[in-house]
Length: 220
Image (cartoon, rainbow, N blue to C red; front, side):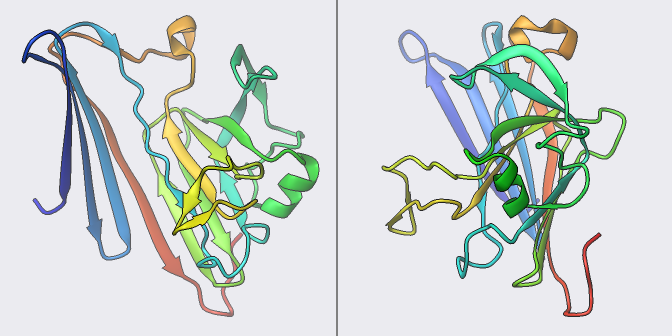
């Protein structure tokens, strides 16, 4: 079994490890697969995520000309401090609709502050997301078994953030973060992130595939 396996442990009292997180990744040709597992000696909650940024133009431009599409039905409503309110809003006919392919430029025009939002997948559909850059012809397709995806356009990046030795600039990359719906501990009707003592929990393979389209090919 080829791949990279990272193990993170946290200590309780003395030398006893009370929590363990395992991050496994495997790159095969143009496909990256990721699995995240957790184990605890006490009951706890477990909603792990990884937070990669993408710019398919290889930083030749911002992500304005990228197109994004995901099979999502709802948006997690948040307050002014970006804390979930407990409501799920439909994305249909809204400025957040990404069910059909839409440019980042259009999303930012409709949402000038940028996106830092959690979208909920259709539980009965294909939990996938597509990102495409016509300038380079590169397309990324990601699939997951998670409930939701947070999309962050980095429209207002933190000043201290550094990328490749340079301060993060506006719309330089798009963060795509698969996870369970935030605040599930207060909304059991949406599911659970409970991790029972001694029971290992694994979130299934997340695959990210990269292709390079030829000039005559298009993305629907």
